[in-house]
Length: 363
Image (cartoon, rainbow, N blue to C red; front, top):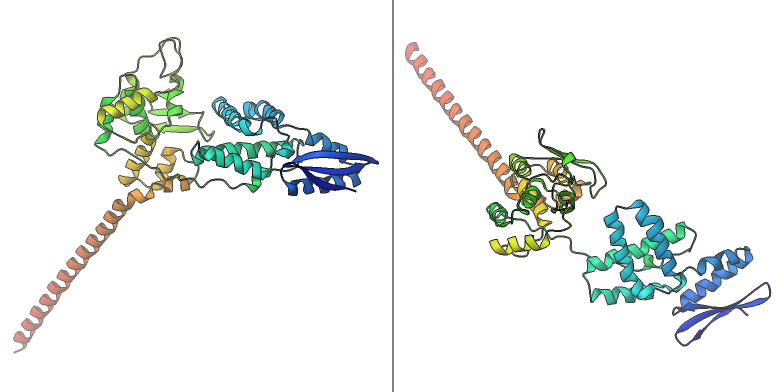
């Protein structure tokens, strides 16, 4: 008789196909074993049993290899595909060697708990999101039929960090930068460009005549035009061009800078700015614009945000500007009222004077 049974911590299913007895190791979940057995029964009735058995033999490692080769490297930017490799490497610690049907929601919850003791919630969420997408691709490729990550809740993230430089801190930081870093920081704080966009910038996309930087390889995969002010133009004009390299910021061998973290941290320490990241220069650009009274829609376009919601995170900074606008309205209205009242008084005095003169003439 068909059924499920347990040996140690592992559940198995026991069933018959064409008169032959089949026993199959499922995992630590009785519920999953019951689901597998029910699925087999349906498949046997519909003559699809052997197709499903083939899909059950897929391992995490096989799926990971296909995911990287057939999805990440083909459809994503190199740096994003490289990031996927890192995410999968972390996932492999718990899931390598496992068949897909052995990876249960409980197993994923245990992975989530373990990683939460080692990394921030956002990092764990990125790993779980990668695992979820891997299962989605497995379903799309007809390698598997279910996605256990759907039953696992992600951590709540705090994305409200919006640190920015005060106006007087900007020149202090720029002056504290080493020569190679100074134009990089200047461009970041006066254009809002991301670090990767700056470090990968090539001269052919810099139009100093019209004051435009053309970005073709952006985070949103959308072409963007960045406007330069005089400070940015001057910073770029003073950078010596490397004869054998197309990059604006590069080493003596012509290869672009991969990172500037050490020199940036040194500059921060030199000018006494703490708890500040390079990406906060982008926040500085947006924050200062909003505090100057620039409208949110314009800030959105300058930042290259895909949705207005992303820019609205800075809207609270416009409160003093809004208050000033309301106060100005009040002053203007009060002034008009005052002028109107004086005008009415003058008019009334004139009428009274004319009336008095007319009475005296009639006498």
